[in-house]
Image 1: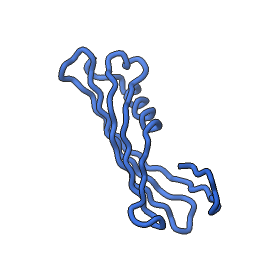
Image 2: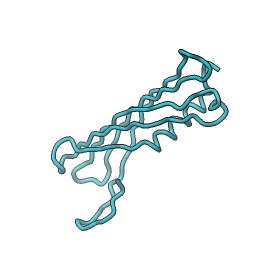
Image 3: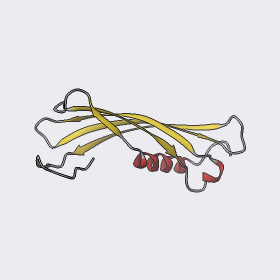
Length: 117
């Protein structure tokens, strides 16, 4: 199968994004409202087309802005996924996905032991 089912590809994107580990670091000092990060890992297609697609990989980047006075920020992600096709020496599929999200920053005290990230 040269092209996988569109629904399978979209589910694979969503599942791999959820499983990605984001290594976010602040752009400047801790007080900076802007943070950058990267994502990378394995991507596995599931569903009806998964038997024709090998395990793939993904890599991406993110930028997040947290308002200085608001508990809500905005985050944008761009991720590239690549899969090879089983039983085909040079065939592959790739997906580029982008998302924009609102991020709520939970208020935590100075001595908080647990944080969301």
